[in-house]
Amino acid sequence: MSGSNLHNALLRPPIIQILRAAGFHATRPSVLDTLADLTAQYIMILASSTTAHAANAHPHDPVPVLEDIYQALQDAGALRPQLREWEEDWQGEEDMRGLEGFLSWFTGPANREIRRIAGFVPSEGDMVDADALEKEDFLTALKKKHSKTGEESRYAGTVLGKSADEHPIIIEGGAPSLQDWGSQMRSRAPYMADSDSSGVSSAPSNLSDGEGMDV
Image (cartoon, rainbow, N blue to C red; front, side):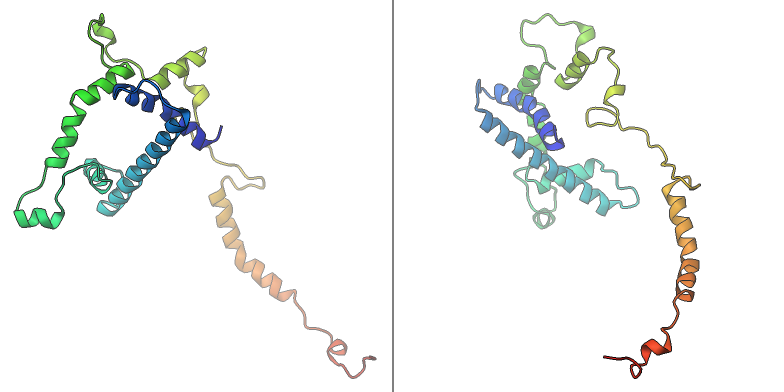
């Protein structure tokens, strides 16, 4: 399975849960695939915009912070209604309606219903264990189901696990790494150029002289 197909497959369960929370009980596979593609593109827009804001605001440490995410949400149109910067300057106050609306949705009944469908919030009438309020997401549960030992090592270095440890590449011939090999090649470049120039001799005079040649 290619990377894009895997990512779309991982997006399908959350989208199904959101549709179920919105009141939809069925959908066509083509509709679900379209929503997964749109969701992936939207996430890519948010991620790239956040990265760009982080690189511009603090290039010495381009790790995104909350302000970068906030600006990316503004760029994507997720915070509405929202005045432009010059309108805020003209009024002399910052427009917080978009951010307050986003926070109200995040803490409101719509998002709570999504979390309930996903299994993170108990339904009404359920017996709740205080020690098991934090439930695992579907991907973690699925990984444990298909792993007999329950270890994360089998997923290391993949999109489902942690990043694999980097190991230096040993090159035959004595160079311990690619960087050292490149340094050796750059240091040998002047000597190689001199040897090439000294090995080139002028053409014999009898070949350059066309008078003695028969046509």
